Image 1 (cartoon, helix red, strand yellow):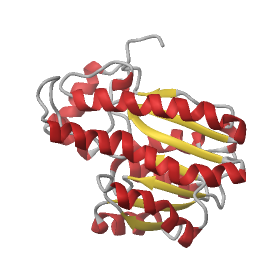
Image 2 (image 1 turned 30 degrees about the vertical axis):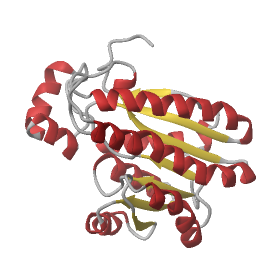
Image 3 (image 1 turned 90 degrees about the vertical axis):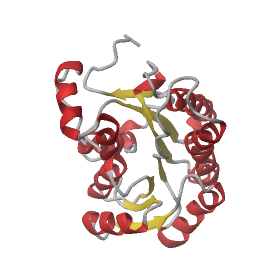
Image 4 (image 1 turned 180 degrees about the horizontal axis):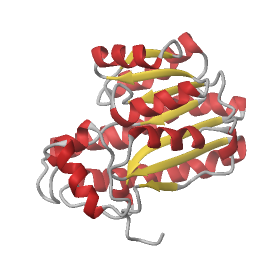
Length: 251
């Protein structure tokens, strides 16, 4: 299937490993020029080598809001105007409803709500001028069904979805789509850290996930590449689960 991404400029946050890296790989495979960003310059260089000549690294920490506000302009100067934004801006610490202190709440708000807002604020004007753009937020199934001991994620990812839904309605007539992908359990370092090991996470998934396995990051990348494509021009304002059937809710 031709996705119409050849030559498009994409900015992918959190792209040095895991889901972000898989998204960058998928977009580059479809011909996009991909600006990959994360706070680790060393991991970014490794990711750029893996992805190849279509990837250009830009170090940025999602907690540094001033840096994020200037990042799209830096990418545009090097590669051209940002046409695709993938907001993969991190996962906050674990904790129940009353476990996290005010500093952790502030950090989660900055990374999961303000960071996508600032990035969108920087790229949407150009998308409007060109009457084409794609924004994909890397979210969580916790926006549908809050997860135990992930209160900061439950709370702030819902806030991000509210912002993005509002934005999607304002720009839909201008050729810009805005969607969130609600992640289930994927074989990433973050899940391994949370579950103790990747083997433990895989074992749990074999009985708790209807598909009886963890998702593969490349499967996530394929979905995002489609959402960024010409073929997905009528999909906007949505929260799309990719979780092997884990969510129990019908809607």
